[in-house]
Length: 103
Image (cartoon, rainbow, N blue to C red; front, side, top):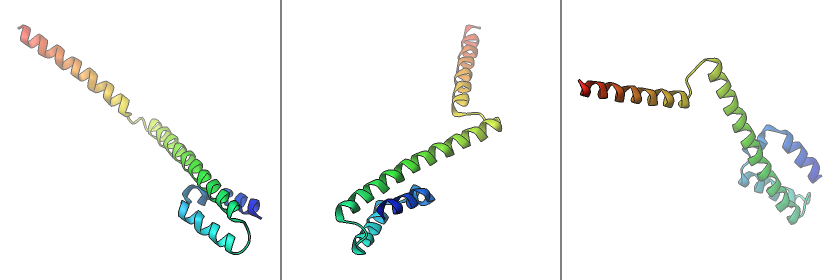
C-alpha cells in the first residue's frame, strides 16, 4: 500500500510543491488509519521531501533553460553581452580622454 501511494504521489505534479508539513500530515493520517507504521511513516516523509526537492530543482532548471532559449530566439542581449559592451565603452572612453589630454 505504501509503495502504491508513493508511486501515485510521485506521478503527480504536486511533488514539486510538497512541504514537509503536508507530508507529516499525510503520514499522521496513514499511521492513524493503520496503513503504515511509525518507521514507514518517517521513511515516507523523508522520501517525499527528497523527491519534492529533486522535482523543484528539475523544474527550476527547465524554466531557466526555456527562458534562456526564448531570449536567444528574441535576440535579447544577455548580462554578459551588456557587461562586455560596458567594458568596451570604458576602454573607448579612456582612449578619448587620453587623446584629449595629449592635445
